[in-house]
Every structure is written in C-alpha cells, then in structure tokens.
Length: 461
Image 1 (spheres, rainbow, N blue to C red):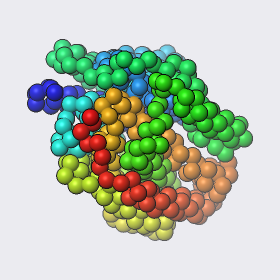
Image 2: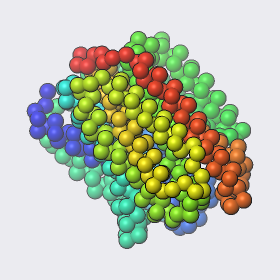
Image 3: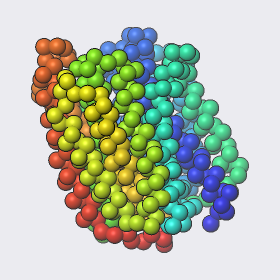
C-alpha cells in the first residue's frame, strides 16, 4: 500500500486529468461557430468535432479497462496522458476540419485510457474507509472543469483564439505523466496472468460504434438500422464472452454481482435523464428568453457548481453511510427538479430556473460519488480497471441516449424546421415532453438504485 504522500499525489494527478476532459469538451463547444467558419464545415461535419471524442471514448473504455488490469493501470494512465497531450497539440495545428476530427478521435482514445484507470487507481491506493472521500474529490474536479469552461474557455477563445484551448491538455498532461512515472514505482496489475481477449474487443468496438452512432443520429432510417445492428452485435458479444476463459468483459459480474449490476444500471439511467437538460435549456434560454450565449451560460453554470460542492461531501459521507441510500436520494431530488421543469414557458422567471438548476445540481452531486463508490467497492481488485471502464461507458452511453431522446422529441414537434417565433410554442411543448420522459425514467432509476442491496466486498479482496 502506498504511503500517504503517494496516495495524495495519485489523487491530485487523477483530479487534474479529470478536470481536463470536461473543460476541453465544454470549451470547444463554445468555439464551434468559429471553427466551422474557418474550415467551412456544414452542421453535420461540425457536430463531429464534438461527437468524435464522445464515441471514440465510449467504444474503447471496456477493452482499455481490461487491458489496464493486465498490463498495469499506472502504465495505461501515463500513456493516456501522453496520447491526449500529443493529439491535443495536433488538434491545435490542424490544417483542416478533417484533420481536426481525426485528432479528436485520438483525443477520445487518450481520454478513455484515463477514464478507465483514474478511478481504478484511486480505488487501488485508498482503503475502503477513505475511498468515498477520494472519489468525491475526483468527481468535484470533473464538475469544476464543467463550471470553469464557460468562463475561462470563453476568455481564452476571445483573447488567444480557439487553438489555445488545445494547449491546456498538453500543459497539464505531460507534467502529470512525468511526475507519476518518476515518483510512484508501484504498479497495479492484479490480472497480469490473464490473456487479453483481442477478438472480443474487436467485436465490442464494432458493435458499440454502430449502436452509439445510430443512437446519435435517430430518427434517420439508416440510424435505426445501425442501432439495431449494434444491439445485435452487443448481444453476440455477450454470448461469446460467456464462453471465454479470459473475456474482455466478465459478464458474470452482472449476473452474480447484484450491487455491481444495479449500480451500473442506475448510472446509465441517471446520465440518460440528465445530460440533455443543459442542451434543452440552452436552446430555451436563447430562443424563448432571448438571452445571449454568455448570459445563458452564466445561468446554466449554477448546476455544475452545486454538483462540485455536493459531490465531495457526499463521497466522504458514503464511506460511513450506505451509498445506496445517498444515491437514491440524489435521484429522487433530480426527479423533483425535472418535474419542476415541465411547466416552464415564456414567462418563467430566471430566479425560478436558477432554483431548479441548483436543485438538479444538488441531486446529481448526491448521486454520482456514492454510486461510483458502490461500483468500485463491489468488485475484486483484478476487476478494478474493468469496473472503472464500465462505469465510464455507462456514463457516455447514457449521455448519448439522453441526447437521442431529446433530438427525437424535438424532431417530432418541429420536424426539420429551425427554431423560430412561429414554432416557439411547439418547442416549449416538446421541452415539456422531454422533461416528463426524463422524470419517469428517474423514478424508475430510484427503484433500481434501492434494489441494488447494501455494500459488499468493500475491501476489494
């Protein structure tokens, strides 16, 4: 077990990388109009500047998590920082939109290498009675990245240009990798005697790519076909993995470990019901309430600020209290917040919206850290990388599902029209439908969260 100095150092380095990804993701979204004009991108191509990172991260998380358990989590984490840093530099100097998207895909792979090992490293070095606090601090770093992006990212774009955003990962990633390599000599690879399932990984990546991309493009006909193809591919993947000695994803974890299975399901539902809230409210605030992007961003930042404040506290609390209860309470608060969003209209006050956003931030902060603590504490040490990759996959898949639901509902209400004064009422009705669907899903998520059972295997024996 590392000493207290090494534990603190690992936590700080993981927190730095946890800050980078959401900060860059949100900041780049602010720069999309500028990037689009520079590279003459249409709307579809422009969306890939954002979607490419999300998809590449999601499809590689599980294989990379298992690989980290075999060859070493520290090693994969260090290389993840390097891959993200180098690809970010190439993003900054990209001569065209195509090159930018290609290097954004590589950025996503680097992010997956850190997603799959960051929480696993924290779980490896912190004992059960300190783990929740450490995970809570790491989740707080994520939300600080989200909160800082609209302000710091906006100033960077205005003062130094959009390319400056991509130097942030390099400025933070390279020193983090070097520091960890030089100062921490311990490696964590409890599954080092196992063989890596190459073919299972290939099937998973192909099936997950089709499924995620199909979801992101609904309701187009080809998107429906891709989603179905991907779903059948994932079913085939599970059937094959059930028969392998060293599977890339041990399906028995879901069948035999109720806490692991239900906690992951709760994470999937939670992200599916919360991620698109900011997307819908951003459009609502700018079109219906007439706010500028900056004004809308300053109001929406209330939610991640509350998340950051609460996540650290709830993570520490989950070391002594049942994470199931805390996470379920958080999801219940989210359901209430979603119910309060259903009736919003053109005359809804910003004070009301601010209170609801604070409530949603409180709920998500209560849910995230305890739920992650429950997942990481439910598996043996040799599965920590896989568990870390799985929970990150649930998060990214949930985010895509959330956007798919929102996009599909908006399409039903508005068709292919752009939002304009003639269809403001239809957009408001569509928004109400989206929030109602999310509320119903959250209520179902509360039941799943409560049904998971109490803590088990907290020592990761």
